[in-house]
Amino acid sequence: MTDVNRLPVLVSLHHVGFQFANGEILLEDLNLSIDYTPTGIVGRNGMGKSVLARLLAGVLVPSCGVIKSSARIAYVPQTIELLPGQTVAQASGCAQTLAALERLARGQAQAADLELIDDRWDLAERLRQALDAAGLAEISPDQPAEQLSGGQLARVALIGALLRAPQLLILDEPTNHLDSAGRDWLLATLNAWRGALVVVSHDRRLLNTLGRIIELSPLGARLYGGNYDDYRAQRDAQQHAAQAALEHARLDRRRERQRLKKDLDSFQRHAASARKHAETANVDAFTKSRWKGAANEIVSNVRSAHVQHKQVLNERVRSAHERVVDETPTFLALPGTLLPAGRQVLTLTDCQLPWLAPHAPSTFINASLCGPIRVAVHGPNGCGKSTLLKLLAGQWQPVSGTCTVHVPCAYLDQQLTLLDDRQSIVEQLKLMDTPLAEAELRTRLALLQLDALRVTQPISQLSGGERLKAAMAIALWRKTPAQLLLLDEPTNHLDLESVMAFEQALQGFSGALIAVSHDAAFLQALKPTHVLTWDAMGWRLEVN
Image (cartoon, rainbow, N blue to C red; front, side):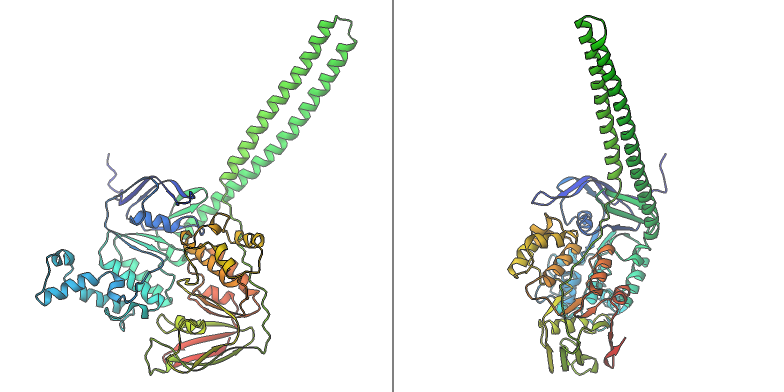
C-alpha cells in the first residue's frame, strides 16, 4: 500500500564517502535522503558539514558511493568568492540572463538568448524588487560587488539563488555576515520559501525554524526529527544513556575482574593442595604425575577462560565508549601582551571612509584611543564597519584625513586573507618566525581540535571553522605579539564550543581590541569598555 503522506525524495546518498587526496577520510558510508522537510546540518568544526552540503549540491563528487538527484538545486557557499571587477548582477548569477534581455530589447538577440532567458522575462524587475525588499535599495545591479559589505553580499547571493527558482536550496552558514535586520529578512524569506531547504548553520534561531536536524560527529551522521531544541534534547538524552551504559560496562568489568581474580586464587590454592597431596600420597610415580598434571591443567583452563571473559568485558566497554561522542573542550591561548594604560593605541583625525557617500557625516571618524580598551562596533550592514577595520589594519587608505595605529596589531577579516591556502598552518607560522617550539605549537593547535594531520595539510583543505582557528593561530602566535586585535565577525565559522572558548580567551587578553560582530552574546561576553555606534549623523564613541 502506498504511503500518500510520504514526501518525494529529491537527493539520496547511498554508501557515500569522501576522501581527501592525502588519504584522510572525512565522510564514510553515508546513507541519507533529502525531501521537502527543511533540514539543518550541524556538528563541530571539521566534521564535514560544508563537504556534505557541496556533495548534495553536486559541487563535489563522492570518493565512493552513489548520489542520486532529481531536483533543480541552488547552492550558496559560506564564502562568496569575487573575481576582480565583478558586478552585483554577476555576483547574483543574473548577469548573463540580464544581458540577454538587454540584447533582445535592442533587437540584437543571439541564438542562445532565448534559452538563457527561458521564462524569466521579468528578471530585471524581480531582481530590483528583491534588492529593495532585502534593504538594498541603494544597490544597483551594475555596481562593483567589491563595494558591498559582507552582509550585503550575502543577501545578494541568496537573492540570486532564489531567482533561479530551484526545487532545493542549499545554504552554508547564511547568517554569518548578516546584521539583525538582515537575519530578520533571511528568516522571513526562508519562511515564505516553498521549496526544499538544507542549511548548514550554528545559528540556533535559524535552526529552530527547521523540521529535521542531521548531526555529523565521529559516530557518523544521525538524523533527529524536530528543530534544534528538539535535537539537543534528544541528543543529550542519548548521550546521557550512552554515558550511563559506559559507566555500567566499566563497573561490571571491574566487578567481574575482582570475581575472576578470587576464583583464580581459589583454584590455584586447591591446585597447590592437590599437588602437595600427590607428593605425599602412597601411589606410584605415574599416578602422582597424572594428578599433578590434572591440577595444572585445571588452573590453565580456568586462566584461559578468564582471559577470554576479560576480552569480552573489554569489548563491551569499547563498544559502549564508541557510542559516547568525544566532547573534548576547545582551548585558545592568546599571547601574553602587556599594554600600559596610557599607551596611545590609535588616532583617527577627520578620517573619511572609502566607498561611502563622500559628503555624509557618517563617513568621517575622529577618535583617539589609549590603553587596553575593548571597543564593540555597532551598525547595520554597509555602514563601513569592515572598512574601518581595513583602514586600521593598513589594507586601505582613507579618502581624506589621517589614520594612525601606534602598536602592533593583528587583523582577522571575514575572508581570512592572511591565510596562504597553499601552505600548512605550521609552515606559515614558521615563515612568520613564531617564537613557539614546534612541539608547543602542535600542542596548542591540538587544543583547537587541529590534529597532527590537519596542521600539516594545505590550509585550503580545512573547513571554515578550522580555517578561522588557523587564522587565529597565525595572527596571534607570530614573532611579534599583537597589542591590538581587530576582529571582523570572528565567530562566523565557529561551532558553539569554539565560540565559547574564544570568548574565554579574549576575556583574559590584556591588550586592546576592536570587535565587529552581529553576535550580541559574543560582544557581551567580551565585556567592552566602549561602544562605537554608527547612525546617519555620524559615529559615536561612548563609554559602556
